[in-house]
Image (cartoon, rainbow, N blue to C red; front, side, top):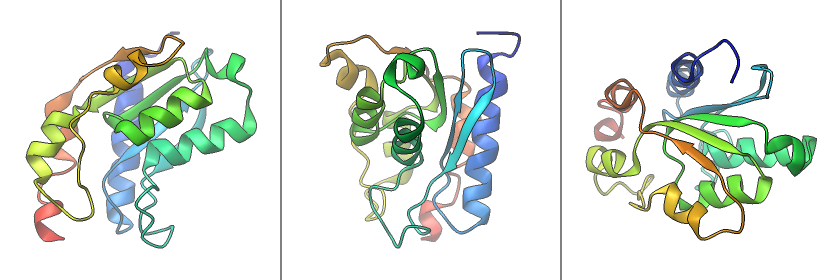
Length: 161
Protein backbone atom coordinates (compact mmCIF):
# COMPACT_ATOMS: atom_id res chain seq x y z
CA UNK A 1 0.00 0.00 0.00
CA UNK A 2 1.38 3.34 -1.03
CA UNK A 3 0.46 6.84 0.11
CA UNK A 4 -3.30 6.47 -0.25
CA UNK A 5 -5.37 4.77 2.45
CA UNK A 6 -7.90 1.97 2.32
CA UNK A 7 -10.54 4.58 3.19
CA UNK A 8 -9.55 6.71 0.19
CA UNK A 9 -10.02 3.86 -2.29
CA UNK A 10 -13.10 2.50 -0.55
CA UNK A 11 -14.79 5.89 -0.90
CA UNK A 12 -13.95 5.78 -4.62
CA UNK A 13 -15.81 2.44 -4.73
CA UNK A 14 -18.73 4.12 -2.95
CA UNK A 15 -18.75 6.81 -5.67
CA UNK A 16 -18.93 4.09 -8.33
CA UNK A 17 -21.87 2.51 -6.45
CA UNK A 18 -23.66 5.89 -6.41
CA UNK A 19 -23.08 6.24 -10.15
CA UNK A 20 -24.52 2.75 -10.74
CA UNK A 21 -27.62 3.70 -8.74
CA UNK A 22 -28.00 7.00 -10.60
CA UNK A 23 -27.82 5.03 -13.86
CA UNK A 24 -30.71 2.85 -12.65
CA UNK A 25 -28.70 -0.13 -11.48
CA UNK A 26 -28.10 -1.78 -8.13
CA UNK A 27 -25.93 0.40 -5.85
CA UNK A 28 -22.69 -1.56 -5.79
CA UNK A 29 -19.26 -0.57 -7.02
CA UNK A 30 -15.68 -1.70 -6.92
CA UNK A 31 -12.25 -0.93 -8.29
CA UNK A 32 -8.95 -2.68 -8.76
CA UNK A 33 -5.82 -0.96 -7.50
CA UNK A 34 -2.35 -1.97 -8.61
CA UNK A 35 0.69 -2.37 -6.35
CA UNK A 36 1.69 1.26 -7.05
CA UNK A 37 -1.74 2.67 -6.03
CA UNK A 38 -2.82 3.11 -9.65
CA UNK A 39 -6.51 2.53 -10.27
CA UNK A 40 -6.52 -0.15 -12.97
CA UNK A 41 -10.26 -0.85 -13.35
CA UNK A 42 -13.58 0.49 -12.11
CA UNK A 43 -16.88 -1.38 -12.23
CA UNK A 44 -20.43 -0.70 -11.10
CA UNK A 45 -23.12 -3.31 -10.80
CA UNK A 46 -24.20 -4.40 -14.29
CA UNK A 47 -27.47 -6.22 -13.55
CA UNK A 48 -29.54 -3.90 -15.76
CA UNK A 49 -26.77 -3.06 -18.20
CA UNK A 50 -26.33 -6.77 -18.94
CA UNK A 51 -30.05 -7.47 -19.51
CA UNK A 52 -31.01 -8.39 -15.94
CA UNK A 53 -28.05 -10.74 -15.54
CA UNK A 54 -28.19 -11.97 -11.94
CA UNK A 55 -24.45 -12.77 -12.12
CA UNK A 56 -23.40 -9.27 -13.22
CA UNK A 57 -22.28 -8.19 -9.76
CA UNK A 58 -19.66 -5.46 -9.84
CA UNK A 59 -16.99 -7.71 -8.29
CA UNK A 60 -17.59 -10.65 -10.63
CA UNK A 61 -17.56 -8.43 -13.73
CA UNK A 62 -14.38 -6.68 -12.55
CA UNK A 63 -12.70 -10.03 -11.80
CA UNK A 64 -13.53 -11.27 -15.30
CA UNK A 65 -12.17 -8.10 -16.89
CA UNK A 66 -9.01 -8.28 -14.76
CA UNK A 67 -8.44 -11.94 -15.62
CA UNK A 68 -8.55 -11.13 -19.33
CA UNK A 69 -5.93 -8.38 -18.94
CA UNK A 70 -3.41 -9.60 -16.36
CA UNK A 71 -1.86 -12.84 -15.13
CA UNK A 72 -2.50 -14.11 -11.58
CA UNK A 73 1.06 -13.33 -10.46
CA UNK A 74 0.46 -9.61 -11.12
CA UNK A 75 -3.09 -9.68 -9.72
CA UNK A 76 -1.76 -11.23 -6.50
CA UNK A 77 -0.16 -7.83 -5.85
CA UNK A 78 -3.44 -5.97 -6.50
CA UNK A 79 -6.31 -4.97 -4.22
CA UNK A 80 -10.03 -4.97 -4.95
CA UNK A 81 -11.94 -2.28 -3.09
CA UNK A 82 -15.67 -2.92 -3.01
CA UNK A 83 -18.66 -1.19 -1.48
CA UNK A 84 -20.04 -4.46 -0.10
CA UNK A 85 -18.46 -7.77 0.87
CA UNK A 86 -18.13 -10.08 -2.14
CA UNK A 87 -20.84 -12.75 -2.16
CA UNK A 88 -19.88 -16.40 -2.52
CA UNK A 89 -20.03 -16.16 -6.35
CA UNK A 90 -17.90 -13.02 -6.44
CA UNK A 91 -15.45 -14.40 -3.88
CA UNK A 92 -15.01 -17.43 -6.14
CA UNK A 93 -14.30 -15.15 -9.09
CA UNK A 94 -11.76 -13.17 -7.04
CA UNK A 95 -10.10 -16.43 -5.99
CA UNK A 96 -9.85 -17.81 -9.53
CA UNK A 97 -8.64 -14.49 -10.91
CA UNK A 98 -5.80 -14.35 -8.39
CA UNK A 99 -6.48 -10.95 -6.79
CA UNK A 100 -4.43 -10.85 -3.58
CA UNK A 101 -6.37 -8.50 -1.30
CA UNK A 102 -10.02 -7.54 -0.85
CA UNK A 103 -11.15 -4.48 1.12
CA UNK A 104 -14.90 -4.08 1.58
CA UNK A 105 -17.35 -1.70 3.20
CA UNK A 106 -20.65 -3.35 4.12
CA UNK A 107 -20.69 -6.96 5.33
CA UNK A 108 -22.94 -9.58 3.73
CA UNK A 109 -24.70 -10.01 7.08
CA UNK A 110 -25.53 -6.29 7.24
CA UNK A 111 -26.57 -6.22 3.57
CA UNK A 112 -28.89 -9.19 4.04
CA UNK A 113 -30.55 -7.50 7.02
CA UNK A 114 -30.96 -4.31 5.03
CA UNK A 115 -32.25 -5.75 1.75
CA UNK A 116 -34.47 -8.45 3.19
CA UNK A 117 -35.70 -11.22 0.92
CA UNK A 118 -35.56 -9.41 -2.40
CA UNK A 119 -35.88 -11.26 -5.73
CA UNK A 120 -33.08 -9.20 -7.30
CA UNK A 121 -30.73 -9.64 -4.33
CA UNK A 122 -31.24 -12.94 -2.50
CA UNK A 123 -28.15 -12.26 -0.40
CA UNK A 124 -26.09 -15.20 0.84
CA UNK A 125 -24.90 -14.69 4.38
CA UNK A 126 -21.59 -16.43 3.72
CA UNK A 127 -18.48 -14.40 4.56
CA UNK A 128 -15.93 -14.12 1.77
CA UNK A 129 -13.27 -15.14 4.30
CA UNK A 130 -14.97 -18.55 4.53
CA UNK A 131 -14.95 -18.95 0.74
CA UNK A 132 -11.28 -17.94 0.52
CA UNK A 133 -10.33 -20.24 3.43
CA UNK A 134 -11.56 -23.23 1.40
CA UNK A 135 -9.02 -22.44 -1.32
CA UNK A 136 -5.36 -23.25 -1.80
CA UNK A 137 -3.94 -19.75 -1.69
CA UNK A 138 -4.23 -16.91 0.77
CA UNK A 139 -6.30 -13.81 0.03
CA UNK A 140 -5.98 -10.98 2.52
CA UNK A 141 -9.34 -9.51 3.60
CA UNK A 142 -9.92 -6.14 5.28
CA UNK A 143 -13.45 -5.29 6.34
CA UNK A 144 -16.01 -4.35 7.13
CA UNK A 145 -14.62 -0.84 6.93
CA UNK A 146 -16.70 2.37 6.90
CA UNK A 147 -19.72 0.06 7.18
CA UNK A 148 -22.30 2.69 8.14
CA UNK A 149 -21.24 4.82 5.19
CA UNK A 150 -21.38 1.79 2.90
CA UNK A 151 -24.84 0.80 4.16
CA UNK A 152 -26.09 4.30 3.36
CA UNK A 153 -25.59 3.45 -0.34
CA UNK A 154 -28.40 0.89 -0.05
CA UNK A 155 -30.73 3.20 1.88
CA UNK A 156 -34.27 3.07 0.44
CA UNK A 157 -33.10 1.35 -2.77
CA UNK A 158 -34.52 -2.13 -2.20
CA UNK A 159 -37.80 -0.89 -0.73
CA UNK A 160 -38.41 1.13 -3.92
CA UNK A 161 -37.81 -1.82 -6.27
